[in-house]
Amino acid sequence: MSGPGALVTPPPAAPRRVETERMVLSAPGPGDREEIAGLLGDPSVGRWLGGTLDPVAALGALDRWSGHWAAHGFGLWIARDRAHGRLVGRGGLSMTVVDGRAEVEVGWAIVRERWGQGLATELGAAALAVADGPLAVRGVVSFTLRDNVRSRRVMEKLGLRPELEVVHRGLPHILYRRPAAGA
Ligand SMILES: CC(C)(COP(=O)(O)OP(=O)(O)OC[C@H]1O[C@@H](n2cnc3c(N)ncnc32)[C@H](O)[C@@H]1OP(=O)(O)O)[C@@H](O)C(=O)NCCC(=O)NCCS
Image 1 (cartoon, protein in one colour):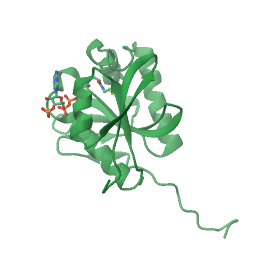
Image 2 (spheres, helix red, strand yellow):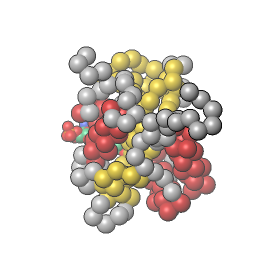
Image 3 (tube, helix red, strand yellow):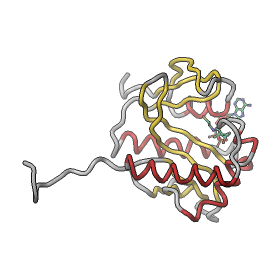
Image 4 (spheres, protein in one colour):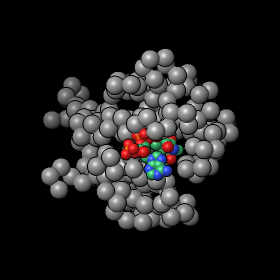
């Protein structure tokens, strides 16, 4: 049935706010600007994300992440520590194109002083739970520079498996994919 008064099923949407054991994950907002500029301007983080961003470019990234939520009903979260509210990182699900194909990617970036505490893995697990649950996305991918051993380890811990080497922005990357349940 269609026309006025017809019931329309809304497209699946991800929660805009999720609590994990140590973090609150929220869709981006204006209150995140300053700390996100700090994260994206840090060379130890930017080195793995295609380069650092100045504050204006970081603001543009934040706007794009908000636009992605509006367009797709899911997107990257801003991660804050539950205990004191300070920025931990950003990550979650986003649309990407790899090797000419549209894919749902899981990704993460954590502030330098919090590396090695399992936070990217905790964030990634929350994102995959959303992919499995409300979004029902199969075959989530993640990709990184070949020598990003930390990110590759997070992918492995989350159950993704290396699938192929791809050139992204002119640099060698490795693409991981999460096998479908039971595969
Ligand atoms: C990649 C990144 C998100 C990892 O965050 P994190 O919170 O430190 O990740 P976790 O603590 O969940 O896991 C990191 C794993 O890498 C391992 N690791 C750390 N340094 C390593 C090294 N030099 N060689 C091999 N493994 C290493 C850790 O031991 C850990 O694995 P384990 O739990 O089996 O011990 C973080 O380093 C970061 O923000 N990097 C810059 C941005 C980035 O690279 N984003 C991904 C782009 S695809």
